[in-house]
Structure formats: structure tokens, C-alpha cells
Image (tube, rainbow, N blue to C red; front, side, top):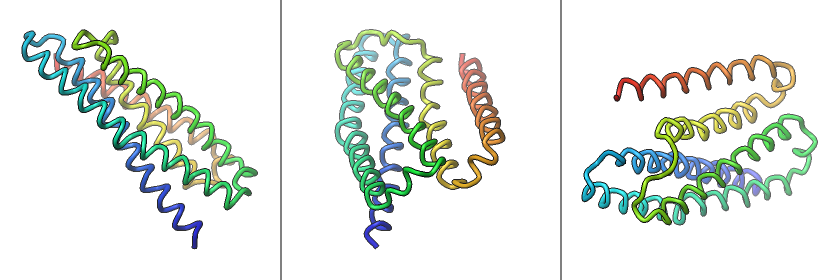
Amino acid sequence: MLYTILKAFHIVFMVSYFAGIFYLVRLFVYYKDTDEFEAAKKQILREQYVFMARRLWNIITVPAGVIMLVSGLGLIYLNFGLMKTPWFHLKLTFLIGLAAYHFWCWKKVLQMKNLHGEVLPIKNIKLRQANEIATFILFLVVFTVILKSWVLEYWWQLITGFFVLVVAIMLTVKLVNKAKK
């Protein structure tokens, strides 16, 4: 019973964490979108985006991430057999990628805070593409967990499908960005 309750907490806070990460990178995009605005409007919006990003990071994203991590470690402790399964090793690999993405987001939050309304030194299209990284990681983790035993047998189909998804989303982002201009 404890394991199932802990798993439910893990899933709920995983959803909360990803919601925070998804919206956080959107705020980076919105901040960057103000580059062409008049000075007064730009300053007001950028101050608001920095405020929103910091609150989102400190009140939702990081606490949800910590609870997700602690509950995940609790699940491993209660079922250490997970560490012997190949699918779980793959999941942990994807979570290392998520940790790197989390660190990148944290650096951007700090950078926005310290810019004092100045230009964010990254191209808009790069931010829009970076916005999809969490989606890719979420897909990888969820499909790995759901397909568990099939991961080893059908790994090449999963990888191929993943790369098709990545290319499709990246092309969509580029097309939408071109249409916007």
C-alpha cells in the first residue's frame, strides 16, 4: 500500500514539475519576444516575466522536482529490484538528461534576473526549440516506463519513432516561426 501511495505522489509531482518546466521556458520565449518592443512596454513586460519566472521556479518547479525526486528515491528504496531492470537504467539515463535541462533552465532564470531588462543573449528560435526538450524527455520516460519489457526487444523502433517525433516537432517550430514573421 505504501509503495502505491508513494507512486501516486511521484506521478502527481512529476506532472507538476513538467508543467512548471513547460511554462518556464515559455516565459523565456515571451521575454525574448519583447526585443522589438518600445522601451517602456519592453521594460514593464520583462520585469513581469522575470517576476513570473522566479516565482514559478521557486514556488512550483523546484519544490515539485524535489518531491518527485524524493518520492522516486523512496520507490527505489522500497523496490530495489528496479535497479536490476534494463528499462529502469534507460529511464535513469533520460532523467540525467532532464537534470541537465533543469540546470540549463536554472541558469536562464538567473540570467534573466541579472539582465535587469537587457536582451537575453540567445536566439528566439533556439528558445522555441529548447521549449520542446522537456516534451521529448517526458515522451521518452513515459514510453520507457509503460513499455518496460519491450524496450530491449523493440529499442530500434522506439528510437526511430522518437527521432521522427523530434524532427516533426522541430520542423513545426521552424515553420510556425517563419509564418509568424
